[in-house]
Image 1 (cartoon, rainbow, N blue to C red):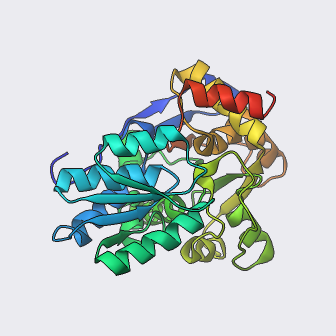
Image 2 (cartoon, rainbow, N blue to C red):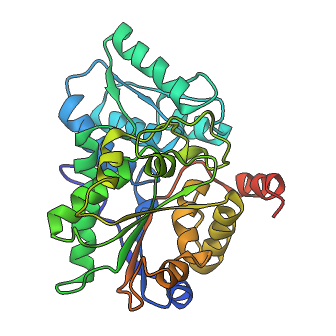
Length: 322
């Protein structure tokens, strides 16, 4: 951990998912980060760059960015205020408080919480920590692709990288990471749930789109507008970014199957990426010639998530009638 707050996470082969996908599936286990998700890479990096002399940090979050900011702030010895929307489970609030953060609950969706975080930063002279839209975040997140390259070894290149998109920070980081390791030609399969699909809406419309509301249960994907940089990446001719949607039921099925297969519980937002394999989407993309018939190993970013436990899982099953 010397010099930064994140861990070099394992890249594990999943035999169950490989069988389903018809090619090797490797899991980048970002759920094993000390804050519970990949967010600590970028947020830890940003805090070290911007907040070392700070009176305190303030972060708006559906959960995971807040956990990362609270963890980094505690390690740096600065106070943290995390603003979450009312859609965040009590479990998240408790975990943030356990990290020593002050928690404010404001508004219904992340965008409301973010307005309050910006106000607090201005009014109280705090360092604002954005959850996904900042170059320092993307630089931090990019480190995971260097680790993937080192784990796969020389001469092995992924057939595709699968990830979930909320506000677009992970996507921007992975693009930067692919550039760093010389893998710009590796397709990215960018997954969202129906009802939290601001990136897919922007790709289809050819411009940034602000959703009216977040209706998906994958609350941690719940930004109503994707960041500008993620949208710009989707327009680049040298990148192949395939934007796809799954239903909440498919994301929930994926996290249950993943729990059975890998003995790891992740949240709905992460289930969107896993569902690309579990729902048969990879085969469909191959049938449509959007992915090659002979596909190299798939790398799935298991982004993790702090807003799930067995009770939350049970609640979701009732809500989604699965």
